[in-house]
Image (cartoon, rainbow, N blue to C red):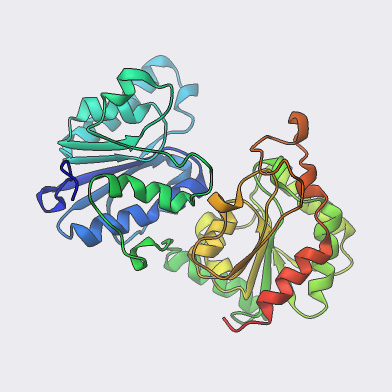
Length: 360
């Protein structure tokens, strides 16, 4: 038993701070569930960037979801001050007893000091110095070798204060919501697609160095389309839409194209109904895992031990390049990762067939 363990029975309100990207926020969802399970009387709030809020909206453990504007830095000084003051007042009014900060974002240290919770926990970030270390009552070590999955690394924050999560509590949670469910049901009905009647492919990532080539995506789609209906999706970003256009121009089959047409909630509802998801290391891959959809995940420079689909049937396809995972934005900073672009269609298709042959 830890001498400095925190009794959740004595905690009335907790704030979980996850100021990173969409996938990171989704992978933090088990932290909310564990807090609720071990402290059923706790009111649990989360602080995220505004564009990532859909990842936690509707989470059954969540009391309030507060947001930092991703674009506040572009506001004028007075406008930004007003927005920050309003957010701080809302946070301070909650009188948190526990603050759980899951990233190295500096705002967490300032909040721990300004809000004054009885307990606060954050990762021990090398090189941050005394200000960071003294801002929190508890620090937990980061996995040194990149072999620990991000979900477990997040839960280490709770282990540090004496909370041991069960396996069931560690699953991802994403709630599409009734409106998103209804729209996807209508779209699929219009295409004559039953539930589990299609393969969902999301070729792109917001980071171009994580994307597979258009030619190989097109070939994979054509091979899968010989036996299954295929639905493709992408975010409504110029680079992602350009990749989709190139894929479609090279594909001989005609997949159902929903690229740029879906909200994040609708994307979750779509992938939940798919028989299989195929994509690169990206938020949609994590979304598929959250919805329980078997996934084929292509990994290049990022580490599959840390980021692979969590607690769902999956196959990871990687190259044999000895330098991966390097974490770089392409070979030599080129935005092109040879360990990913050289992956063959045969390997990815075989992984998909392996999962398709298994009963869900």
